[in-house]
Amino acid sequence: MLEKKIYSSVLIGTGRIGYSLGLDKKREQPASHSMALNAEKRIKLVAGCDTNNENLERWHSANRRAAAFSNIKELLDSQKFDIITVAVNEDAHLEAALAAIKAKPRLLILEKPVALNMADGLTIKRAAEEAAVPVLVNHERRFAKDYAKAKSLISSIGDLQSVHASLMSGLRVYSEKEEATGAYSLIHDGTHLVDIVRFLLDDPVLEKPQISGIFKSEDGAVRNVSAHYQTADGTAVNFDFSGRSKFFGFEVVLTGTLGRISIGNGIAKLEKRRASKLYTGFYSLTKENAHFPRKTCYFSNMVKNAADFLDGTEPLKSTIDTGLAALKMLEEIKEAL
Image (cartoon, rainbow, N blue to C red; front, side, top):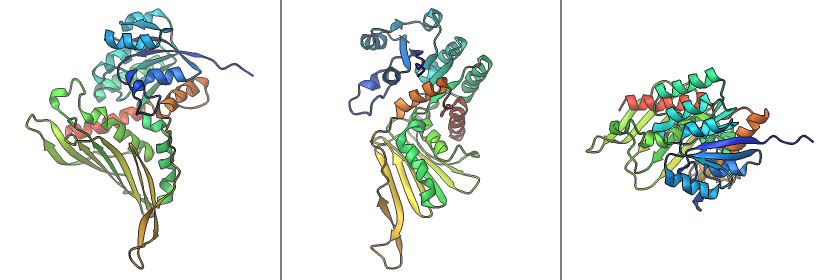
């Protein structure tokens, strides 16, 4: 039996998604790049890098066998890595990704979104293609078992009529003042919403949206907006973004001619057409036992996909192209605000 190859990896960005979300006891673990990389037996996390000394020290205290760097160039000059993970803030994606690509790893794992904007995203794509560096984008729900289950059930609800996706939070949906930082929900969490709808619908071609429901606060920040699309087969696809909600909500509802699927944060439900208990001669939707998985493995499956890809047994399930397709939709929404 052949011994499995161990792939060396390095983490650039040891902050929230890079490390500290892995300490949240309420979240399904692993919930950060560091914890997920450490949990994969075919990967060895050998170094971490962060310009924030506090983040770096906290990460290094939990990863003593790995080296710690505060300078990306020094890190990438130190040795050759099989996998480089870029988990920095949106405004640092371009610089960090280009530096990582220049080092020519066998795989770049890039935290979502691909970049702050399409121009930067296309620059990353061109650099990756020229250097022949594959890119896996961490749109984590593409790897989650509950969303895979929801996708497998779509054919059971008849002809798909509509998709309604919603993101509710207290963070501004968009602000021109934060364009350079990406500190708004349309790009921060909205990229997940748009991407997972694309995944569920097999990455359809969608024309520019119709925009409605724009609400702005006194500082000019967009707090509510809705975007409406239609697929080639006539399915209505609607996105609602709220930045004035007193709760966090993330949900996708797919309605067919025979039933409905609801999937999101803390939500996994299948309803099917059954004879109504309320009205003679009518049919109503009744909840079915669809056996959605309790553990979704969203982060561990992403890292597993990276190792499987390097083993040559699986293609990448979330690529630079799917990531850019989501970013393009977000830019089109911004252009209409």
